[in-house]
Image 1 (cartoon, protein in one colour):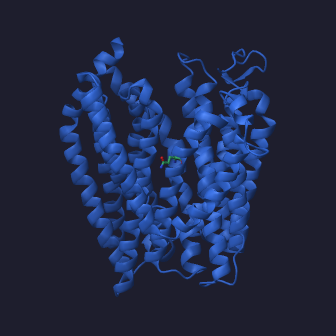
Image 2 (image 1 turned 30 degrees about the vertical axis):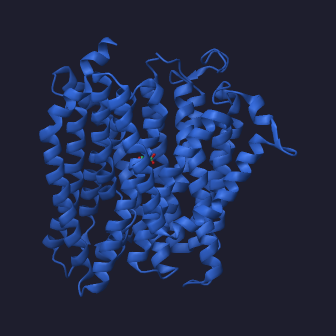
Image 3 (image 1 turned 45 degrees about the vertical axis):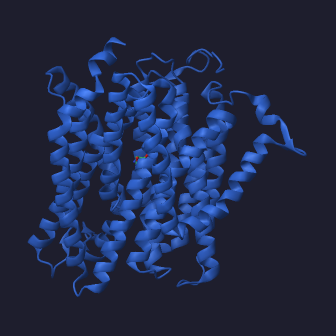
Length: 506
Ligand code: GLN
C-alpha cells in the first residue's frame, strides 16, 4: 500500500500545501501548454498546410480530441493495476514529447504522403501519451493528502489553475511561432514545453513523497516473455498501439463506432448494476449520474467548436487587430483559459455565497445553465456579426464575449460534474464512473467534429461562407438554450434522485 511518509514534514510546505503539489502543477502546466498550443494550430495547419477541406479537418479534429479523452480510461486502469501513476505520467510525457517533435516533419505541404503519415503517427503518439498522463497526474494530486484533509479541494483548484496557465501560454507561444515563423516552430515549442514538464516531474520526484508508486512492484518486474518484464511489455504494447491509433485518427467513422461500442457496453451495464444490484437510494443516484452523463456530450459538442470551426471563423471573418497588431487567430485559443483563471475563483465564491442563503443551484440545474450559456455565446457572436454587417469583419469584442459565456458554462459543468460523479457513485465503482465521464467528454468531442465538418461542408457549398457558419451557430445556439431550459425545469426531480441529505448523514 501507499507509504505513510509524513505530510510535508520532511520537505516542508508551500502556501500550506505539500511542495509536491507544485511539482504536479508545473508538470501539468507544461503538458497543457503543449496540448493547447498544438490544438490552437491544428485546424489551421490541416487547412493551410495539408490543404484539407474544412469538412475533412473537422473530422480529424473530432477524431483527435475524442481519442485524447478515450485513452485516459485505459491509462488509468493500467496505472491502478500495474504501473502506478508516477511511472505512467513519465512514460506518457515522453510519448507526448515524441509526438510533438514528429509534428515538426512538415513535408512540402499538400497531400504529401510521407508527411501525412508522419502526421497521423505524431497525433497518435500524443493521444496514447495523454492516455497515460492526463488522469494519472490528477490522481497523484489527491494522493498527496489524507482522505479527510480539507486541503484536497483547494489543491485541485490550484492544480486547475496550472492547467489553465498552460492553456493561456501554449496558444500564445506556439500560435505566434507557428503562424508567423513556421509551423514546425510552433510544434517545436509544444515539444519543448512537454520536455520542460518532464524535467520538472523527474527532478521533483522526491517531493512526491513516494506517492503514485506501483501497488505491487514485484508484479511489474516479473519476467513474462523471455527477458521482458511486465513493465516493458506494457511500454512496448503502448508504442505498438500507436499504429492502430494512427489509423483511427484518419478514420473518423471508426472512432464513431468505437464510441458507440463503448456506449453499448457501459450504459446497459450501469443500468443492470442499478436495477439488479443496488438498493433504491444508490439506484436513484446512478440514474441521476446517467442523466448528467447524457448532457456532457451535448455541452462539449458545442463548446469544442473553439479549436475547430470557431478558430477558422476567427481566422477568416474577424477583425483581429488589437492595438495596431493583427493577432494570429490561434492566439485567441488562450482566451478560454484566461477567463477560467479570472472567473473560477468568482464562481467558487458565488456558489458558497448562494449556498449560505440556501439558493445554490443544484448540480443538474448548473448543467442546464451551462448549456444555456454555451448557447447564448453562439447567439452573441451571430448577433455581433450581423450587427457589424456581413460585408465587414466581425469585431474581435464578440470573440471575447463568446469565450466568456462558454467559459462560464464550462465552470458550471466541468468541475461540478467531476465532483458529482465522485458523490453519486458507489466507492467500488468510482474509477469506472470517472472513466465513463471522460468517455462522455470524448463523445462530445466527436459530436463537435461532426458539427465542425457540417459547417465546413455548408460553407464550401455557400456563396457566403461566414453566413453559412453563422446559420449553424444560430441553430446550435438555440438548441443549447432550449435543452438547457428543459434541464433547468426537470432539475428539481433529478436533484431528488441524488439524495444529498442522506449523503451528509453517511
Ligand atoms: N480544460 C480542462 C483540461 O484541459 C478540461 C477539458 C475537458 O474536460 N474537456 O484539463
